[in-house]
Amino acid sequence: MKKQWMVAGVAVLAVGVVAPWAVGYVTEQQWQSVATEVSQSQPLFRLETGDYDRGYLGADFTGTITVRNPETGNEHEFDYQARVSHGVTGSLMDFSLPSEAGTRVEEIFPDEKPKLTLETRLWGTALIELSIPAVSVLREETGESFDMSESYTRADISGNGAHADILMLWPGAVIRAPDLRISIEDFRLEQTLEHLAGEVWLGDGDMSLARLEVAARNEPVLRFDQFALRSETTADDDGQSLDSETLVTLESVTADDESFGPHRMAFVFNGLEVQSWSELTSALTDMQTAALDSEGGDSRAVMQQQMESMNRINQAMLGLAADGFSLGFPEMSFATPYGPVNGEIMVEHPPVPDEEKDRMMMVMQRLTGNLEVSMPLALVEQHPELGMQVAPLIKQGVVEREGGRLRMKGTLEDLALDINGNLIPLPPLF
Image 1 (cartoon, one colour):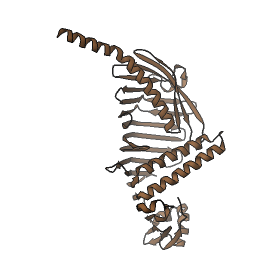
Image 2 (spheres, one colour):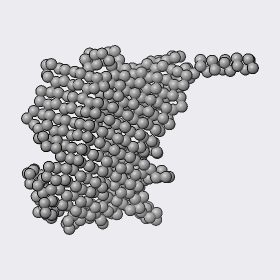
Image 3 (cartoon, rainbow, N blue to C red):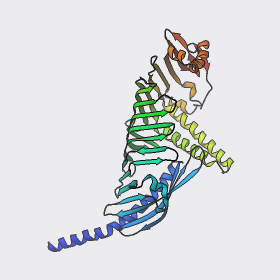
Image 4 (cartoon, rainbow, N blue to C red):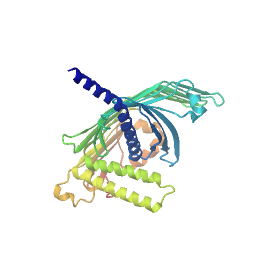
């Protein structure tokens, strides 16, 4: 028995000695894989790794994050460095800015620096935590200042990246300039993601902001209170179609010391075929990437890629329509000092029989839908710029007056939109 315990002890000791080296090797491979996947999965930034110096109990490496402006295509590079500690079952990466980052960082964070850590485990889990200390910056020469409370972000990833729980807490910030003051209070984000297939993710999320206030010189103070966004995306039992619902609410808007609210808007889509939706998302991403890469590139190659992406989008749209779907805004309600603005816009496409799918040429042909918008007449009368836009619609009969309200009601069928009896032909799309 004593000999067996000695053998077991030697085995445990051997594992303890070898484990940090194995963990370090796996960590390096995982990081290189993550960096490549992040760079290839979206066009807005690239994550590159420089020298990776791996030792027995730890490692050091450097890298660059390249951020691309989607409007101009201009790129900005930011260097980073990391220190890795290897354990028996995982590693801890501690990221920081290089010492040559300059006085700008010291000016913003004179005492405590932002802290970003990544804790990984061999079985495919990771915990990312970002803490940004409170900031208080004053530029006396311009009178500008920026104050931000300490913020915290955490992402708990499992299933080799297939599941993620994200939390972001930002108590607030204040931006001041001689002619402007902007304040933000209590921002919170909670998001759960579950990978289904391809580019498709399921989950639910909640985002809220207690208050946003903008005060400009010679302008009334504008304040938004209790903004919230809640969304949920689910799949059917066999994972072939998607349903999603998003609800946006705003408790009140205050301007000129007058408050009005609440405001609500809901968006839904139901029955989206998963494979076609994934292909549509991927094609849109590729088209965006091609647009960003067009500057200074081969224009013919870019045009060819754009045409290929557009063809993929058309085919994906046909696939979505063939299986049937519905989407739109089932609820829109906005409060004004003169009364509520209410509306509903919904569009749907029926499933296409299997024997007709191969002959299907257009999506628009079978689309049906309805819309209804109602607003107080006093709102138009008190705002001349809005009245100038609505007056021609009233004259054409597209908008009708009913008592103290203006209404627009329409239906979509057979490639035509009927609004209050006015038939508007629609061009065939897709």
